[in-house]
Length: 113
Image (tube, rainbow, N blue to C red):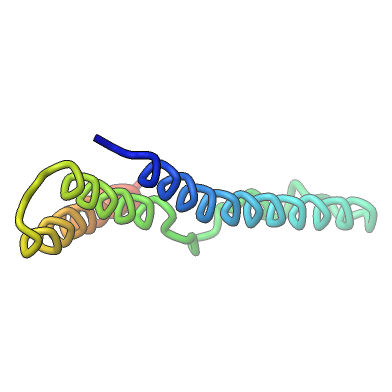
């Protein structure tokens, strides 16, 4: 059973990752908005520009999320089972490896579209 310390640890990790990611998203959106406003004020037609993010360079957030989720699922599986301590690392690495393979195939099909 999950105790109070585990819940607090999960909450700290979630907040430690979630808050910075949401701040990064907010400031990127704000910068893009300010850029559009400046272009409109200068009289440039923004419909002609590629401001929608249709460029080829994208950061692989989906792949990173799949890998982190796989690692977390492996750690959760280890935490919920009472296996020998020598097996813990192997299970976590197994889940991480499977998630990397899954991320590769999902990213490959996305790139082919």
